[in-house]
Image (cartoon, rainbow, N blue to C red; front, side, top):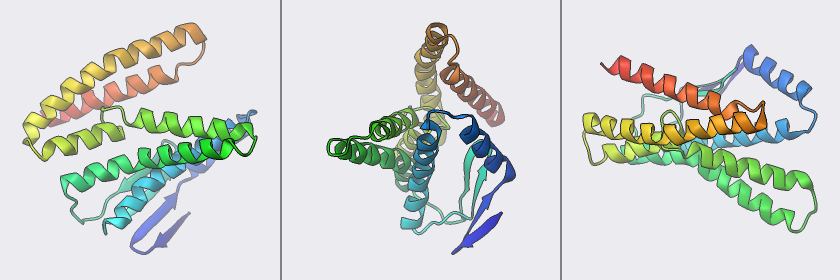
Length: 202
């Protein structure tokens, strides 16, 4: 299914619809809905920023692994690219704050759960490793001052320094929980991404 809003084409693929349906069917706690809304609003932050900067994306595709944004031919400055990357986490932090304040007046467990999910999503995406938002923002900020070659070297060093404790944390979570391997899988994915990117750059 697809629809057009202005110059942007939005596509919802069958894998995305199937993945969401399966997640909702298997979830018994109700946390899946909050997590899904949290992620959608995070991506909406990036989209709203692109529209605000007069650079609406050419295509937005919802697939099994999330949202892919194909940018238009409009060129953004490094500063605007960094701002766009940070827009997603900023939305999560704002929502976490609003939900936390509202929970002081309305007693509902889901409010604090949603606030925590938004806070964790925002913090996780700020990790300075590509392809996360923090890594993209750092790269564009560095490109304002340094050339691309030096920027890549700095990014690689920061990524390595960040991934080591993150991976150890993933192993610790798996060991003590006995089943939660999410963080470890994310670390493996990021490491594979960086490896392929560096090979492609040679």
